[in-house]
Image 1 (cartoon, rainbow, N blue to C red):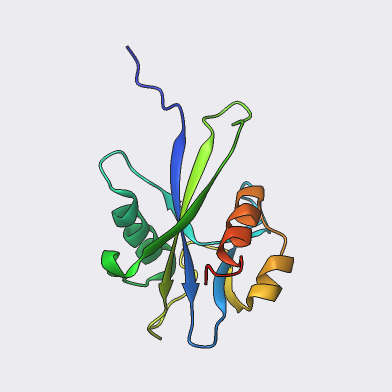
Image 2: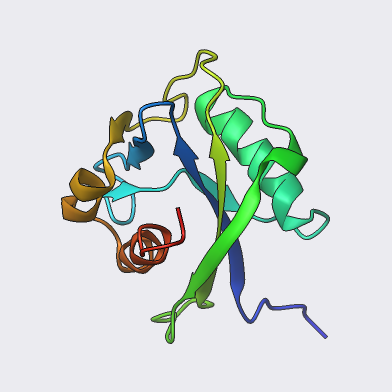
Length: 140
């Protein structure tokens, strides 16, 4: 029997700097949701834990090395329909930036935003839901 995934697990990072701003990644124009802002991250591979996948993805995308224990879970968002593909569940973690160098290594761009600015950015639907959870009173 062929092993077809019934859903896709994705991890994302809400990274905060010392000024209370949050890092967002703008997707390359030629990708799905191109030009929209998202929390950086990526897919969890079958042999990984979500936290280890987050550490790997952030190093690949930003060149930033995180300690798994420094990433705290915040919440998740899920699609109800995958539109012809397995639905996605995004698990959001948060961490504080230590000031080390980083950049958008896999395309797109990165920038820092206050919670108010980040709420106004054009984002994919699941990132809209994640931002609402992250910036809700009492969460951060």
